[in-house]
Length: 537
Image (tube, rainbow, N blue to C red; front, side, top):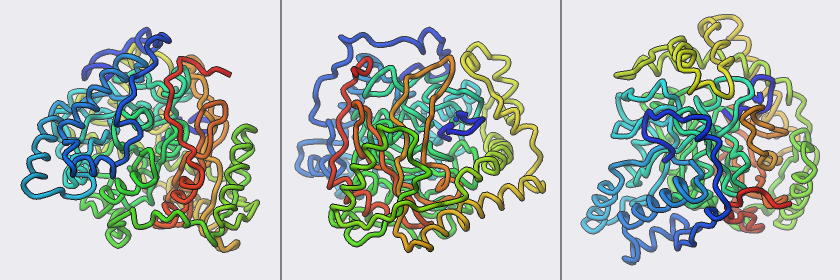
């Protein structure tokens, strides 16, 4: 959850597993002398570039894994100390070595063979790593098996390099939270300006891939948690249609909105990763139709001329929250027109703003039901229900609740079950407002291929006392609808990245990827972060 933007969510290798993260450690900042990592041949390298290197013998999977682990040590634990990686995989080098041997004997499995990837710490792995959602309450618990995401990555031959820090419990815990902070992992810093926020909740995934600590990363989203940190950390993020990527083994918030998705430095890499992640998950009923929508090779939609003749609708109600973003967005619209798109501006969607309250009700009900189900499947766990988590946080408040509380958890615990009239009405209202009277209606009325808007504001100064300072976002409508949403860098006001969003109907990932790629090629807006201690204005 991206703690957006409404009343309650604004209202939503740091330490060894289980180590307490004190407020003093969280608040520590790097000195200017520590903020200039050495250039690396892996800076901005693509998945295709890594494969070419392994094919030619320039690289090996083990060598890449060693190099990325060294970068994590130098940049994440020391130097700028981004704090984006919550835990390295102790088996990563052994896995990479085995994959090198397999490549020599049989050839590569596919485009991810030997490629190091980081995944968010709410995505279960049945190995020597923890799966905690950043909470001390889950330290020491054991998951029954790999998540669908981890299993697909392993099957594709990727090297799971480690797990990324996140906004604790995917930012569904309390009011006035600070994105990128978890009790287990501490605070993730923005690689463009270290005193600014990464947004969340996939904070570590966004910061790590932007800082070239991995080739690609996986995040999760309920509302904004992939696209917001992607925008603010200057990378590409794809929030897929709910049901395209399996959710089994992911610490849940909402079965109607949760999904995992790729975060990468280029649209091509994000599309390649999505191809590996997508497909039927036998433990997730939502994926029953996934196989017919799987993109076997996402790169076939990478057309630099993909915007020609395309009708794009500008959702003006999702802009206007920041004049610097508006200026960059105006330039983006000119670039889209120059690339051949027809811009319909404005496109009115009357349901925007009406969906927030029913969404919150759905999330509260589903969080209680879905988390209780997830926790019941863990072994050696300290907590077995949401009620147990709340009590654990109260007993460990100095470590778990030093900056903000757990009001959302308490409100969720007070809810009834999913058969209640209150839940059923809120769920129906969400579907009607986000789909029928929202995205579907607007696209049909204006004969659109996609809707567009700025993704988010530039990064704000991290404020552990008052919490996040969101000013605007375009994530809610596609999140509540369960529809796909792609963000790609569009500019750098004051040296801080902001993204442009493309979203549309269910299963329209191929079209959105094509549009995002054509825009990316026309603008080349991503800039490598400079790890400045503070922004120089």
